[in-house]
Length: 165
Image (cartoon, rainbow, N blue to C red; front, side):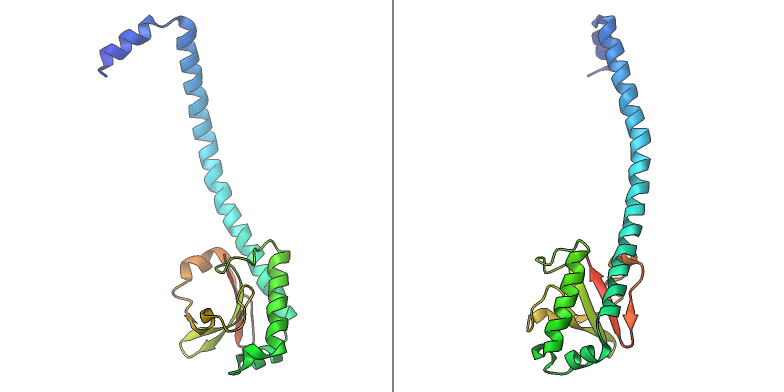
């Protein structure tokens, strides 16, 4: 639509309609200029606070589990021990108590142990014993983008507590 047609259409509108369009434009411009920066600032703050919350959950898990239990889980038949069930239940309780959903396989709290250049999963709050995910290796370099939002990872002796969200 050429500009002259728009101008002629606007000139035929009553004064009240013109003022309504101008007021609506001012309100929209104000909303965009005020709310957009606020949204981006609050999103960054929420990401940082969520990372701190997840790090606190991991720190709680590192206190709740004994190192000897993790050593027995790391053994070849470790997933068939009472230590595995106890550790998985503790991780699941911690994760659910802090707002986590244990029904999604991709989220939860995991304990990994160094195996050569990568890490192997010992226990995950959402995975039952014998699931194929335990055989996969985890590398910090592959998950670096996700770990930035977490901030810190709690660790004890030779294990690390990781959070996937």
